[in-house]
Length: 351
Ligand code: F6P
Image (cartoon, rainbow, N blue to C red; front, side, top):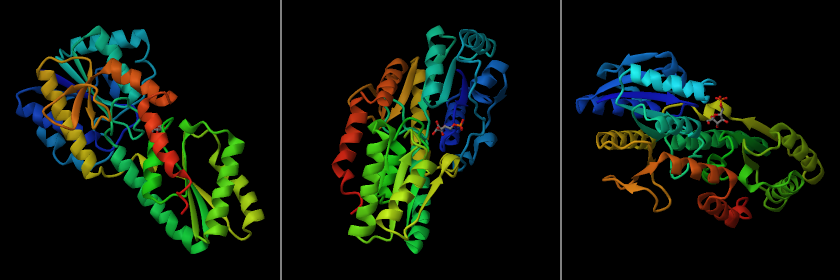
């Protein structure tokens, strides 16, 4: 087969490991592998490169993506998609592997509907907001990066007996805040899915800070806030400072927005393994003629087609996208389960 591979949307650590496996294993299994630069934008331009082994050896250790990525404004339009199909036919691709988050997988499914070639998706996004996928490529590294940053912040916070708000990426999904918050011993974890009203949210944070500094005489308080919480982090810090001045004079608050720091860096061993196994599974599925599917890691339900790898399932892209919508609007059982779990410990976090 002649197999195209592209990375699209926000990059995530582990994308390179996936590119390497598609290339190295693909060549090893007698396929020709064509890299497409800059995501769907590069596909529209026909910006390609024939992949070989020297290009991919050693790249698993690096964050970002050697193929480059982009958020294309043109591709989502019907005209963009039909141009992309023509381009795929011009390139004579038998299959295309699209590595990216939910926007990219939506694009993959739209392309698949026109079937210019076999289409496979690999879930890669630090946000972990992809339906029917327990861990997307990049999430593990991002969680570790956040925890390391919080540990550093905690050192200085304890030295000065301060409170900190740390805002983390995740777009509309609170997974990174939830998981990193537990690991970093946060005193409060804020995520958009809880849909808490601002006044009530601020009062509960005031209560947490009181308990931290007055009741338990802690020397630092850490609030992890997902970027999906619709309250400005700096305004939140200002308001909490006013509360602290009344309740525990002398205690200051600071805030840090980690931003893109969370998206870069050396992929964890776990992300490299997930990426390589998903990519290998995708190659095998394509060799069997499968189309319009996503490979999924450690799904929390019994959904999807089993594979010889016990961690991996094959999910129709349409189903993955429908569940993604439910994840984000809070109606997915997975979202409800994550929130229920956190609700049970929320009042104990500051202990
Ligand atoms: O989807 C990944 C992500 O890093 C989100 O967490 C974040 O909201 C967004 O991308 C940032 O996008 P950009 O890099 O285009 O600013």
